[in-house]
Amino acid sequence: MPQYFAALTIVLLMGLVLTRALLMKRQGIRAIHFGNIDKKDFLIPPFALFYFYIVFAHAFQLPTPSRQELFRSAIASWIGVALCAAGLSLFVAGLVSFGRSFRVGIDTEHPDKLITSGVFAFSRNPIYVAFALVLLGQFLIFPNWVLLVYAAVGFWLLHRQILREEEFMGKHYGAEFEEYRRRVRRYL
Image (cartoon, rainbow, N blue to C red; front, side):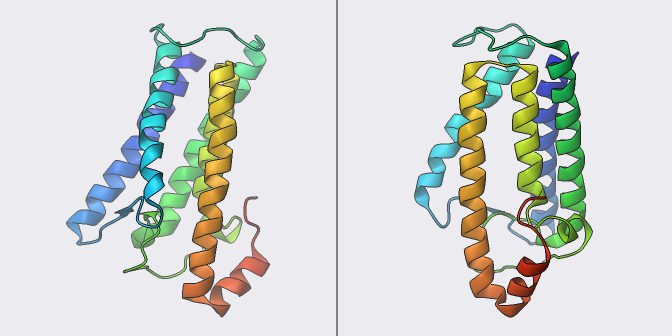
């Protein structure tokens, strides 16, 4: 059961992002701005697709680079399921709070208003925290060295993107963002 939930988590996350982007496109809002700031970001999708394959391969017994487990624990697997569920819940709450301001990447041409309500009143980056919870949860479900490396690199990439976005928001929103930054933590 935990292995199928790990795969379902990826399907749900990707489905939610793509559905939101398509709905916004119908309203005339371009939500996908991935790679606009740094063209090297286009190196990320192939690695993400390989990650998706690794999770699905473990869940459905397909060939993988390694099946060697770092540890084996049913309790850790169920904690992983709980973290994935928490990540999904936080992600949905973030999407709801974002409203029409949701973007993938930094929209330097048409940024919307600064969102500070909903889950953004507790974390400046609930979407990224949600992704981190999912990465950690999937590692606990499949405690493999490959997923451990992906989790570590994923945490670094999320932090890197957060720093970029905060730099942009500081310049764009000025004092409003600085006040928000003083009031609300970066992560949790």
